[in-house]
Image 1: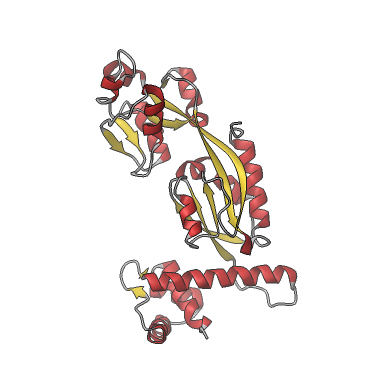
Image 2: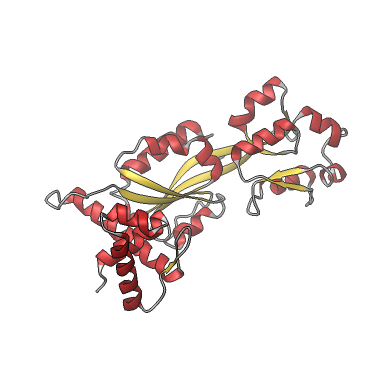
Amino acid sequence: MLDYALLSALAAVVRTGSFERAAQQLNVTPSAVSQRIKLLEERIGAVLVIRGQPCLATEAGQRLCQHVEQVALLESSLRQTLPGLQPESRPVTLRIAVNADSLATWFIPAMAETDGFLFDLVVDDQDHSAEWLQRGEVVAAVTSYGKPIQGCNCHPLGSLRYLATASPGFVARWLPDGMNVRSASLAPCLVFNRKDQLQAVWLRRALGTDVRPPVHWLPSSQAFVDAALAGLGWGMNMEAVVREHVRSGRLVAFEPSEPLEVPLYWQQSRIVGPLVGHLTRAVLTTARAMLAPMPP
C-alpha cells in the first residue's frame, strides 16, 4: 500500500524544484521532507529524486508523481458528486500539452475562463503533443492528431493558418527572381525547433521537391514575427498575427498565397472528463471563435 503522505512530499519536491519550497507548500520543515523522500526511496528500492538546482525526478519518481496527480484529479472529480467529502486544501494542478502558437494566441484566454485549477503546461509541437497524452504524462493536449487516443475524447477545434512571409528587403536581397529551388537553397529560413516541419512542408508544396535551406533556430512565436520584420529570414507565420504587416507592406507573403492550414484537436482523458468539463467547454468556445474553420 502506497503512503500518500510520502508521495505528496515527492510530488511537492518535483513540482517546486526544491526541498525548501516543498516544505513551505506542505507546512513542514525541509528536514521532514527529506526524511519522507528517503523513506519512500527505501520502500520503493530506487532513487526517486536527483538532488540539484532544481531537483528533478528520476523515471521511477516521475511515474509516482503521475500517479499522485491522477489520484488528486480522481478525488476532485468525486467531490463534485459527493459533496459530503472534505473540501480540498488547494487547487488541483492540470498538466496539459499545447503547441507554442496556440499558447501565443488563443489558449491563454481559454485558461482564463476556468477557475479552480492551477496549470502546468508542456509546450511541444502540435504533431508531437499527443505523445504526452499517450504516455499518461498529461490529462489533455492540443494536437494535430485527429483520431481519438485510447481512453480519450477528441474534439475538433479549428485550424491555425500560416503564411510564408519575409520583409521586402529580404526578398530583394535573397529572392529577387522569386522562390525557386536555387534561391530557396540559399535564403536563410526561420525554424522553431527540430520538430518544426511547416517550412519544409510549404517548400515541398511550392516547389514540388525537398530543399534544405540554411536555418535560424528561433524557439519563440513572437521571435518568428520579429525576425521576419527585421529581415533575418523567411518563415511560416500565423496569418492572424501578420495580416496587418502584410497589408501595410512591412512583410511580403510568398506565392502560393493560399495559407497552409494546420487542423487542431482537443484530446482529453475520459478519467477526468467530469472534472475538466468547464475547461473543455472554454477551450472549444475560445478556439472556435479565434481559429479558422476546419478545412473540408
